[in-house]
Image (cartoon, rainbow, N blue to C red; front, top):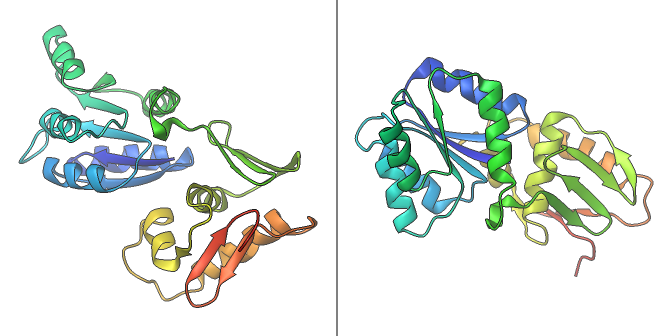
Amino acid sequence: MKLLLLEDDDATRSHIEKALTSAGHVVDVCLTGPDAVFLASSNEYSVIILDRMVPELDGLSALKQLRAQGVSTPAILLTGMDGIRDRVEGLEGGADDYLVKPFATTELVARVAALARRPPSVDAITMLRVGDLELDLLKRTVSRAGRRIELQAQEMKLLEYLMRHKGEVVTRTMMLENVWSFHFDPQTNLIESHMSRLRAKIDRGFDADLIHTIRGSGYRIEASPP
């Protein structure tokens, strides 16, 4: 899943990002409330994680702005404010969950997964399908025509991104920014090498290819190309 993390403390942010990434998620990070509002209102995330006490615009105020804009992405507030009134204020302000610092990152990862399962959010999809290919977002498993396919962590993220954009042309830049969080071209064959391994696992041995190269543009995954 793709997540947004607002946290201004370097050590805490790094610790959380590492835990979420290790769990197979793609994490966009930001340091201020205005940046969180911008990113959450212009991108699709499965869950938003907001530290309450951050510069410029606190996490709760940022969340209120997002709810006012109609952004319904599940959100969890992280805070050292553990009073009952604080928790009520957070939940009434639009938070779906509230986690008091200090907390175990394993609990945060579990709560994020639980939030992503909640209906009716569009982002709460737990199964992606393209033809006979299935990706279970919660179990992190892939199968095609009932046959289990083992993928490495980065291959799983790449496939998830492609499947979330099935039928669309996915460019190299889109993959770098959303799968690797690179906002520049590292001038390597990073994409090509991962795509080569992914295509071998997804398409080899099956009657029809699902992943297609769009010459000069990128890649597209679909069951029946035009």
